[in-house]
Image 1 (cartoon, rainbow, N blue to C red):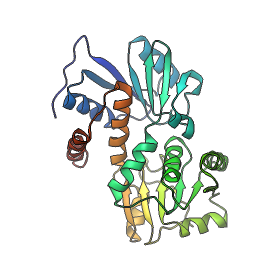
Image 2 (tube, helix red, strand yellow):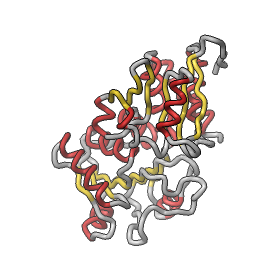
Image 3 (cartoon, rainbow, N blue to C red):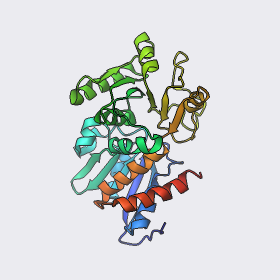
Image 4 (tube, rainbow, N blue to C red):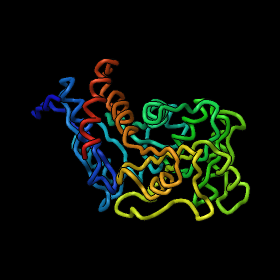
Length: 294
């Protein structure tokens, strides 16, 4: 890919999160900028010392044009946003913020990214499938909306905090009818839903680097060979959950390519630059060469 030039006209963008030292998102954004010749650059902004609201205020003062929001801040921005897109409203999470003279504007690219990425990664479709989703936070909310938009047969939602699962299921059904239900992990009905599911999707940070030995599932939940197991975590490439599932004979996939489609969507929304399909295909091939060799 072409390189980027930084000068007095360069537009500044940030990646804000508390565990971003290994994130390839700035690299993706900058590679897109260099490839199409757009004068912009993204830099990482760690929020471990200063909270996300303070960090965004600082970036606004420094004339940043937008920010990609990483873990754990996707559901923490309502108080400071002056507007949210329909996608952000629908899933109750924001993963990208545009900054202008009026303030902060929130959007979510993860619904469309998952819809696009899932068949590319797995060769499978979501339509008509029974899905068991673990996680009701930011990425879990987006994935739940993606699954029902793609007309899954049913969606069981489980969370460590049972109320979050109930709340998300209620929100999903408000938009799409009675297609989802909350599954409490200690409830026999949840175990039945798990084993009856065709696709298991894990959408929490549990098992992510550096805590790579953590399995997000209770011992009573053991993947079976008929399961397609998808873990949104990309570091490590094979999580404890995916190791267990692979040993059981399941098809297993991680979330690395979701980042590409989510980042490309964020780039286009932040910059108002449309990337045509041919360019997207070339960028995706370059992305695979980069990320698959890490």
